[in-house]
Image (cartoon, rainbow over all chains, first blue to last red):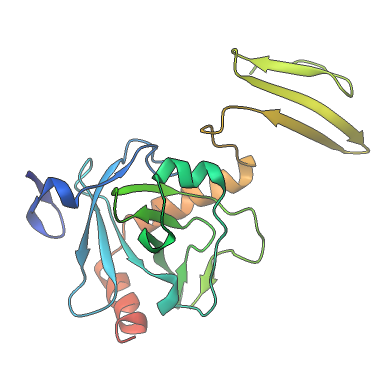
Length: 135
Length: 76
């Protein structure tokens, strides 16, 4: 059990089994390695709350609720990193933010989580058709 | 920054495990081949910076931004 005092949610307690481990952290935020997922009210959105820096949290969503037909190909290195044996264990999440009047999702840097091993990785897609998309 | 000059087909070694080879030089563009452990992530720098910036901007949402996102996607 780990306890962290966050700016948005106050004191949070997370069971060790619920902690998601990003071994390499996030892109540009390599020290952010441990996170938990928290439901966002009654919505399909969630919060990815950092346990390493309590001020850092992301609103995340499965790409399915934003666009149709979003798919990614995982290379062997990523599958190995996640210890992914079964594609059904894969959870894909994208972060979001606001840009002017639009909500923008980061489809180019999705977060991949193996729900069985609780390992996560952020990958960067070099594919110009998968950039951040206005919703 | 260490600056070295290499010609086509010449290489650079980073430590014991990483080799960068100049595969081809065509006008303004240099094609680089990289041999590295599978675990080492390699990015075009501008892409890396872009995603880093996205992460930083997304990690610090204001209350009204959270409301905006919730309104747009919360009902789906």
